[in-house]
Every structure is written in structure tokens, then in C-alpha cells.
Image (cartoon, rainbow over all chains, first blue to last red; front, side, top):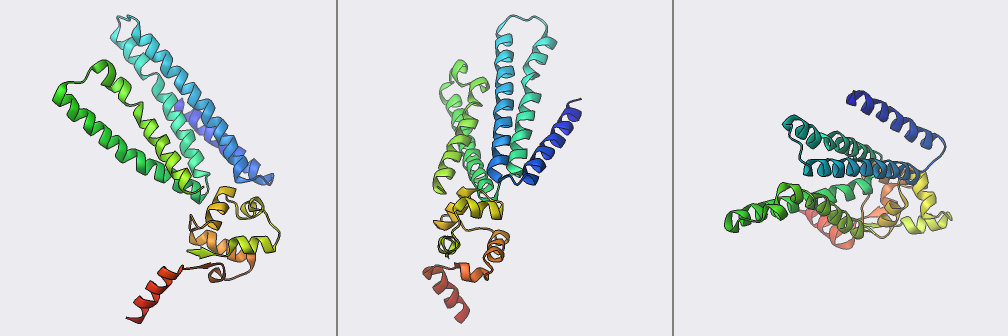
Length: 156
Length: 76
């Protein structure tokens, strides 16, 4: 079912991009369409994630229900990522380079961060309320946005 | 790499946005090329040559250091 929805969305996105091009639209217009979609799907994913976090704070005895709730945001995040990847494929060469440089910064930064957290945890046992996987993954998008800011500044 | 894009564009009275629309890239890309912060790909450079009806080397050239290095290597 999810694959069918993604397929239909892909067709709709292609049709929208084609319509913009045929109407004599610019890359900026195409980018605005994808920017809006990315924002909406990002908000959708964030809402489901927060809902899932909230539900998991409650006492739900069934392990199966807890697993289902924990997995609930995953398809929404994949959907968001797919939109982002689609947006990248519509970008021009400089914008793609900026994305590449942002990821080129974020990936090693994430490795250094995780390695440091892991070693510190071995050394002094970090508080899991602050440093568990529930919280640490939030640093990854921050590294990406830091890389994006850095790369955009370079070409401004 | 140096380029004459700004001069060529000004000669034709085009804005950065006009040129970007013609080439199917963003205005930011044109600005980055003009300020020599970004070197375009070969297909984009060739498209520019086609648009201005010029050979690519009439639009883009290696800067002094790179040109000297290339000449030095060629002389060996």
C-alpha cells in the first residue's frame, strides 16, 4: 500500500514539475513547489514522531502495541526523505554541490560525535536520560544544517 | 578559473535571472560563477558558449597560476 502511495506521489510530482517547465517556469518555481512539499511532509513526520514519543511515555502493557507505536513514524520519515531526494534530483548543479558538501560535513561530524559519546560513555558512564539514542540522533540533522549553512555561505 | 560572463551578460542587457532562466539554472548559480566562487560543469559551460555564440575558451580561461602551471607541464 505504501509503495502504491509513493508511486502515485512520484507521478504527481513529475507531472507538477513538467507542468511548471511547460508553463515556462524557472528552477526557482520548481524549488518552491518542492520546498512547500518538504515542509508539509516534514511537519507531518514531526507530528507523528511527537505523538509516538508521547504514547510511549504512557504505560502500555502490550509489547506488540509498543513496537507498533515505536515504528509508526518510520514510514512518514521515509516519505519525507523520498521528497527530499526527489527535490535534490530537481536541483541545478550548484545546489547539488551544496547538498553534497553539507552531507560531506555532516557524515564525518556524526562519526566523530558518536565515537566521542561512545568513548565518554565507557569512561564515565553518561546519563542515559541525556545521552541515549532517543536524544543523540537529533544531533544528526543539526550537523546537516550546519554543513548546509557553511556550504551556502561559500557560494554566496 | 576566470570568466567574462558578467561582461557578456551586460553587453546583452540581461539580468542574472534572465541568464539563469535561459540556462535552466538558479540565479545563485550565475552569481557564484560570475564571482568566480564556482566553476560550472562542462555541459553548462558549453550551453553558455552556445547561448553567447562563442567558444568556451572565449568565456572561460585559466587564471595566471593555473595557466603557468599548465604551460610548464606542456614544455616538459
